[in-house]
Length: 441
Image 1: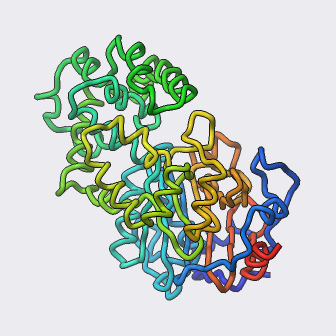
Image 2: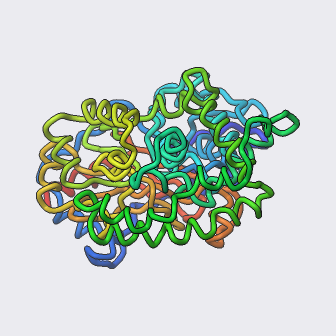
């Protein structure tokens, strides 16, 4: 049967979306697994929870994470969730449905990189603001890497910042190509751009960085984290220029495009200045904490003692700090970067107790992409609803998935937790009573 919580208009575009979606629903599936591999396992989740009733968001939440530069996937997912109806097949042409006016859309970060067009995706999000949707935009690691890379060009080079531009890697190259083609091509763009060798010196870490960084990072990163960072940079330094050349860009093109990105994203009057300005690190709705990646003990304690408003204010103040290293490897940045590896800042039982005491019963995240829809996972004894369902078509092609991704995660007190994905045969539903009963086990 067609689930009653999905209403989609009967137009060719909307029918295209309907054809990609499952038509049946099922109770949220369980499968065998252990605490270590983080698989769906409702019995394990049951043991992890306190005997307290779940508080649901006052306003229904539609969570869409990791759109990764695919505007079509983003808009199709909004249609699939019943938030918008398209007024034409052109990107950005849509209006809110009655349901769309009643919900909050939380974008879980990672709007940039991977997909077909960064600029189209940003313009689609802007169009959603223009139709007066209630939106919360969360910070993702791919998003903040751009900001750190652009800011590093403005800073005096030191061991903590001079690698941050190249650290963006090959996934940022398509953005620079887009910006060059849409804003600079056909202009006298090269007049004030230095020669290729000078651009290389400005953008790349110098020869001493690999020896200096481990000492600079000591006391901030774990030994595993330092080792991982150095190995990653060896690869990125070796390959970055080649990726640029493969895209038809010299380092002069890249340098010019990066300078223009500073105007677009960092200047107050830039076309995309709203992007970082509107970002939040975390947001809490009822017993659910929404963020991009995960938590550590420091952030858990901060949320317990000071709340989300303080954390988001600290996030924005740190975005402006001159010490890029101190920000990018801090507990704040760990929130949009962690995968709970040994190289990440730790979340222990102490942190889990703190976050439970703050009223959070489940974390809703992106960052870890799934190929069979959303997953309920137990990580470090804390429930995580993994909602990155691989939307962008380039990632899907690499993972053997067909077409453009479509899906969203709905959280509200009427239906509970609803996982919609074109890559799973049914719509997953964990109803409110079932979720609340977990706390009584």
